[in-house]
Image (cartoon, rainbow, N blue to C red; front, side, top):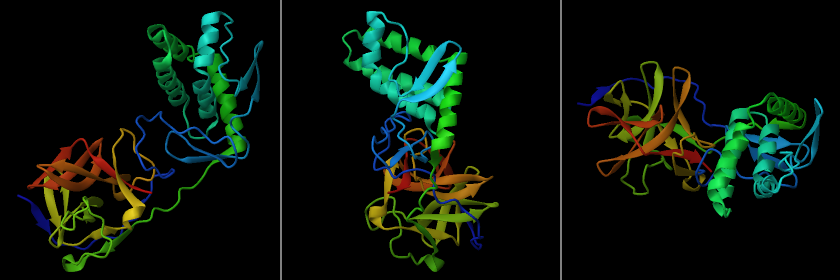
Length: 311
């Protein structure tokens, strides 16, 4: 049975935005990041969805100095030195992927492992248009393995040094959402619903056990999931936003840019989500890769699910 608790919504500082650019659709993969522009302003996303802006073009050929007898550059397409015809073929096939890998190395906030894995994801995709797909996939894997060397680490470190001098992470713009108290169940204008229908559930948040949890409005309560049970909190706040300023996005496995954070628990932001259960969409919070919702007296952990993002 659902538990109902009376109380006041305790004030709590809640982070409203996850850094990054607005996105109308979720990327198919965390590595499917749009290519940076080749003309100013040079803005693009790092692996955390943060907006990177550079004062110089990251597409240029950048001299990174000498590593032993080898002179290294960023922006030289694929720098694998082997001159044989097969290597030359893959340098050409992988050229754009190598450029993106170099730019990934330059961007503040990116890790070497992420950039190296991203290169393989892109070169694997390049192989789909190669006449020798099996050989191409093996080559892609060997190129990824070849990045696990001290020379590659120095390449990474010098690229990051260039990025620190020429690029910065921009602060995220504020999300166009507000949280408004709803005494006695009075819903404010522009209340955010989990569906387009006028009778669908409204997104809310309520304080409980020293934390703040996103959930759904039920009567005059904000119903949340916590500790395996559904709790009806008699006071809370409703999420409001203009319909064209927000969107529900299928969760891609990595939190998308500008996800709306509706609560905090143990110092971690809780992103607003919705999941379908028994033909009904329910609002809740993202916890450990699931959408946790209160329903039928229980806390349900559901997949797949959508997250709410600002446009």
